[in-house]
Length: 426
Image 1 (cartoon, helix red, strand yellow):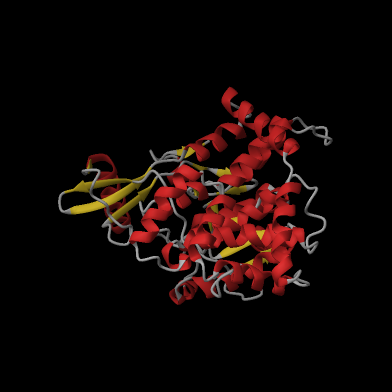
Image 2 (cartoon, rainbow, N blue to C red; image 1 turned 90 degrees about the horizontal axis):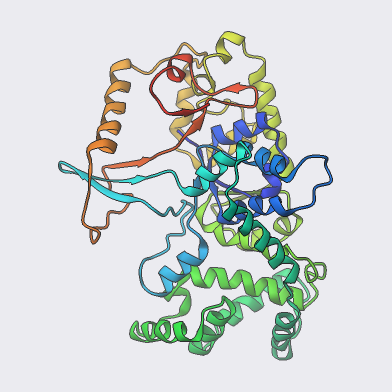
């Protein structure tokens, strides 16, 4: 059991030490946004005042990044796929992964996800190894922030207030956003919305033609993810134009902070230390989602670290996978509350067992499972590209990860696993 899906922003991971980061990695499935990757990389171009080099700062952050995390598909690719009819964007709290290859072995089909390039990059960054192209990207990112200006955009959005009045609260602001989206003239709104998110006029034409062929459905129904992303942009621009976010306008990074919300549909939990996120995330969460303040999240990881630190050395030497495969049976832990909310209730039945490092899966069962996985990964053949297998229908789904043996003071695996042929990072 891996835990509920969670998205964190950069501020969250920066606040953790490596021991605390271990428990984040152990009890949650981290969905890493492309924004986090680029923000981390951009630190290479910062002027540091801590006495450490940019390479050391980035390397430290990369070390704390969850090994078992997955990288969500970039929101621009998701928008393009949805608007052009290439696929439906599922917004149910699960990460949307790219690069999966449909494979077949005998009568069984499956999907194999290789290690994404972002995760490979984090592994290099831990050793302070950076490609020249990465340094170039970091430089362009920082330069782009310095040249960013939003004054013209804010002037444009003030025009909406002449008809509806200036919103005086965030609730009124969200109401205005919904009113704009549900404009009876959906064609006019669609053209406007496509322009806001940066779709070029030549591409707008084919998208509008596809919408018209669909029977001119409401845009919320025709393109739900587009509607969701646009609602965030409208909330940001209109809120700033109305001075509800008066401190936003001259910041070079607030738009990036807002962009983390584009990925909310692909998680159950969002964690952030950012004041902007704590103020507006609730307007975009589904009822089944949770926002956790980064300070509270860190406090729970500190508590977990203290809880497991008192175990005997012989137990800890067996690795966290043996004594902490599930959270403590104690609802004073935030992680236990989240597992109760999002995981199958059967997880608590496992607490009737004594996870003291002596519990072991039946060797024959474990061997059979591992052999099946290895066989499929090694012998399965790619299927025709026109064949699409949904992850829910696949017989097998293999996600390959290189996982570190230790993080902070914690050993992850028993000695026999470390000494086996299993690929684990040193």
